[in-house]
Image (tube, helix red, strand yellow):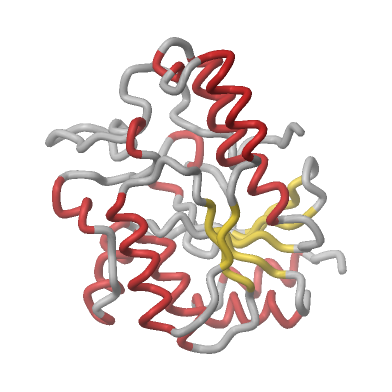
Amino acid sequence: MELTREYISKLEQSSLEDILRSVSASFPGKVVFSSSLGQEDQVLTDVIFKNQIPITVFTIDTGRLFNETYELLDKTIARYKQEIQVYFPEASDVEEFVLTKGINSFYESVDNRKECCHIRKVKPLNRALRGAKVWVTGLRNEQSANRSNMPLMEWDESRQLYKLNPLINWTYRDVMDYISRYNLPCNQLHDKGFFSIGCAPCTRAIEAGEDARAGRWWWESSQKECGLHLPVRQ
């Protein structure tokens, strides 16, 4: 199915639930949602599961997540009694990286860090997206300069699928209001100053006035992206 400008325009005027329902109906059995268990992702998970929208939900376990993230995964599954598929990095990739470069070599260079992210995040994501026609994300325009101009729905040429960003125009306050209204489970680290939460060695709490993603890979001055939302490489 090729989406028309009229279809996209209609989506832009729809509620979050209606956006997800419409896209899942247009691509039956081919819509997947990648959750990192962040606040935005908990909103989307709630809408999908609560309304029984036929979208597959998955997450990526890099092997180096905070224990609080694993606890949240358990709480989320227990609340909705729905399946969240978990994808892991290939053991051989991790073993080779650790053997040749060291367990924490991502601190030594941006190239090492990006390679670690590619092994632990991007390659599992690529496996999870195989066969999908639409990839749902929790991205918002406010999150970073790299995401400020992302549309509601776009064609991902490198992965040959549509990327749906249904929260793209939501503010942080919109997200928090929804979480409060429905008492959604969230990562306890948010209460300790952790805004954007990734792998434990690569995430710190942010200080007052810092950018929301300042706590990710804080030792480098890169684009603050792991590669999940950049053109794919194998």
